[in-house]
View 1 (cartoon, rainbow, N blue to C red):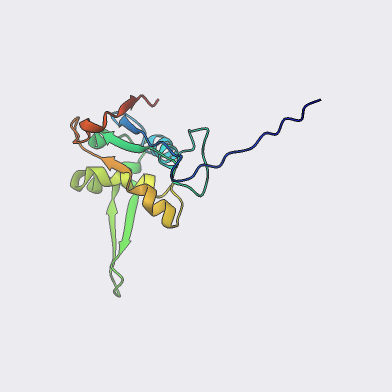
View 2: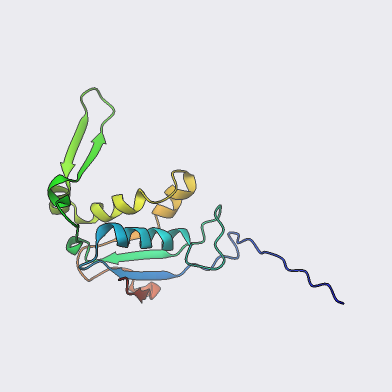
Amino acid sequence: MDSISYKTLAANKKSVKKDWTLVDAENQTLGRIASQISMMLKGKNKPSYTPHVDCGDYVVVLNAEKIHLTGNKWKKKSYISHSGHPGGQKTILAKDLQAKHPTRVIEKAVKGMLPKNRLGRKIFHHLYVYTGNHHPHVAQKPKTIVLN
C-alpha cells in the first residue's frame, strides 16, 4: 500500500492573494455588519487562513451614515476617549458621533473586533469607510458582497 502524506500549508506574505470587497451598510445592524467585516479583514472566510499572517481582503464600506442600531443605543451608547492629561476624559453619544463623523461608528466597531497587537493595527488600515455611494477605489474592481 502506498503511503500518502498530507501536508497542511500555512499561508505567508508571498502566497496570500488579497481581493477587494465592497459592502453596502445601508439598513444594516452595526454589530452584525462589523463582525462580518472584521472576519473578512482577518481572512477567516478563506480556506488559507493563518492566524499570524495578514491574509484578509481590503474592504470598502459605503453608506456609513445609514447604519442601524437596535433598541435605545442611539441615546445610551457612549464612546469614551482620553487625552492623557488629568481631567481629559471625553464622552460622546452614538447619535452625536454619527452626526459629526458618520464613518467613525463603523470604524470603532470593527477595530474593537480585531486583534489588539501590531497585526491588528496593520489589518485595520485595509478598511475604507465612506458616506454615500461613491468611493475612489473603482480601479481595484471590488467585488460587491451582500450581507444580511
